[in-house]
Length: 277
Image 1 (cartoon, helix red, strand yellow):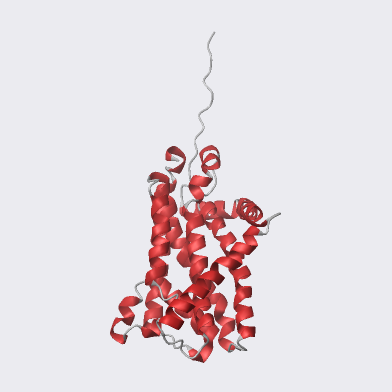
Image 2 (image 1 turned 120 degrees about the vertical axis):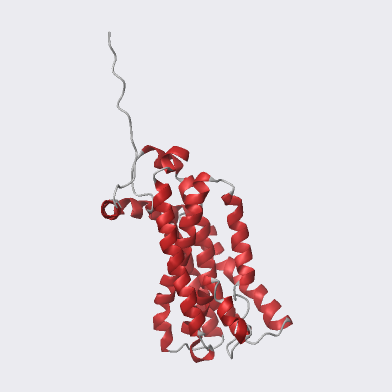
């Protein structure tokens, strides 16, 4: 008696970019589900998530203020040093948390990726949403610091969403690169914490980038997070912080270049995720 083989299951990404973008829209509910699931896991029935979102940047702000403001006596551009530091801690913590979550997101959802088709770009992108929640929770500390020091921001504060968007694009761009690499080379999960720690040291989080000598400012802006952090400080501190526009534009251009290249590489490797994950 002849037996028929079961149908072969083929999982593949959208064949064309046009079809792929349509698929992203069709699977938008999956994006909402993954993002909401991660938020619930982080915050539901626990105070640890909220406490950590507040405690981590607050403690880091205190340490950096003591080291750079009290011991090293670095200038604060006329603003209270804790506000100068926390205006940088907000985008940096957002970038670090987003990068950590998105780089591991594909491996974390390996079972789902190996069984059904959907645009894989949804997974690392949805992982960034949880970091948005942490960002707004930590923003309460900034409001508290402003009230404590009687610091009133200028009209530039209304431009802050623009710099939040730039920070999100920076974290997504690097996150897509690392997420795709992490599927094939699992050693990258050990590299991500090093990248985050090293990036903190070379980014102007604990000090103002205005202390960097003028001849090195443009070169220093090759670190994309320099422009992101300076944009936040420019929007929050107002006239007390002077934005170095050539360096800021360079950082933004690099963020866009990283995002475009990461999308290209992610799409190139996406067809193999289900096979190697």
